[in-house]
Image (cartoon, rainbow, N blue to C red; front, side, top):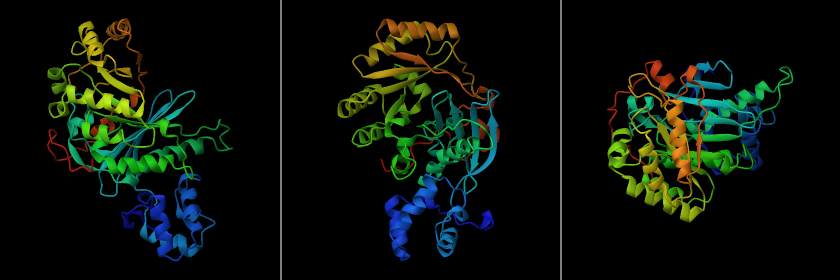
Length: 374
């Protein structure tokens, strides 16, 4: 079928119970749902014709009603060390999103997007500068790691002689605020975690939020033990209001209270993300202020030298200032790491490849929250 004529609904939008219901509605045997599920999430097929144990009539019916994937790769950048791969995807409605594959010695991590653009409008983020268009559908989120899982499988094909690598981690840290698209994101997490398919451990999945408090409190009630990262970037409200405008609605006192409630209910450690910006939030006094704010919270601070974006005057902290900041936190018994910077030569910062393509939505970059199920 010509791709331009394909329907917009994707088979990936169906959870397993939805796939079972669809098969029952077509009077297919119950085991057909599991067969289709395995083709999608174990065998990682990208075409219905590859589902060889399904009757031709069923394959044709599936193809007539459902896209297999809602993503079309339209640009891909590979870092000079070939360990970071960033992809710009076109969606069925013509909008675009980004995802990134980062390969390490022991893991292969995919960073996925949850929205087209972002309503939070962090001032140092290319996505935040571009405004907000819409939430992603479950299939549009689910399909991002599947795309790279296929890539890793092709790399390990016998003809390449390469060592087998499998997708090991997913971080929901790309375009968008995932807690403002809660239901679709959670369906994606459940799908990736499903033991009949991709079987990705819940602790291998991390969700990052700019501080949407109702979503943090809701996440604390979930049974799957996914990781939570909170993008803090400042330890006082005045500065955080400038960097993360969502702070004006949920200031630090409310955010830290939600974080403490999350730890109390789950027993899980939170990652605190802190982008270090030269001579703005990277002084020793800022580190000490951060240590006081986090006192008693079960957390680990991830220090991230800023990834510069076009149109933003902020610059990353020097290595000297990064180390001084880290040592000041260590002096206060705050556990830290400095994130390894990856993909600078392929615009791996959130929203940068999309921004370069000139895909800018018409909405106000300072837009408020979209309608959300949280």
